[in-house]
Image (cartoon, rainbow, N blue to C red; front, side, top):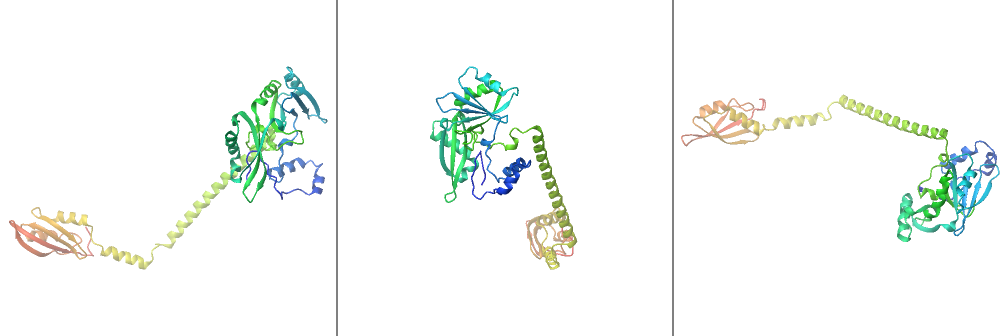
Length: 368
């Protein structure tokens, strides 16, 4: 099942390394690499909220101003108790930070300060869960998505009803606004906002992500060397993809050329009987009407006037008016594609002759 936002599905049957193998690898230098590879392959459940950070600031329950700062940069963690409303809070945090500006800090918020709800939603909503939760939040509560920090995770799934049990946690931005300004003045950079009553009881979410997919663990605080390796791997993937496409195009072009060559070598696609039938049909087809009419009109004397033209399988039957049938018959005898004209009818008509002349087809002669 795809995952969106910072959802965590606790699925049964997930691969777990053998305990003996785990014990042998606990002190191995390869353990961090194996853990990261296992997480990237989806074999372990990532808990970015439980990853130790340099500094963690814990906010108290609503109504209190106590801050707990845990410094884990040394071998032994150090804990400081501060007042959130102290005027010199930024100076105290800068002193804890030391001479390292831009140090990442994580804020841990007590669940009592958050608005937490559990929703049952269709499994099909998982790819766009963030947008669904934002719409539902504004429709069912007085909160607005742009005024809160929020995140979500999947607590469980009901396969029979195809639904998910989703835990949605939001926190008003105004609750953290003063502290965020103090962190900026102290030279600290906010890395995550987790929710939990204690360090070992946090929820699998990060309110700073606002429900977006979090960056993989190896990119969080990654150095230039790690980023260069990631960039090189991505570049190799792009080159491999382009090479594969070029090879596919070359293969397809070669197949097209081979197919065309095979068709040329096989000769005409039609069988001899089909070719003979086609030739017979073309031989029996009458001459084109337009070109026949033009040829006859060009051959007739100027004194003749054509009245009608009929073309059939035997040839052409022409009706015309002319002063002399002999001149007409002599002129029509020169029309290509037809034989000797035959006079079928000749009657007087308005000082001339009404003539009906038949021109038989000659298959062996060139058509007009």
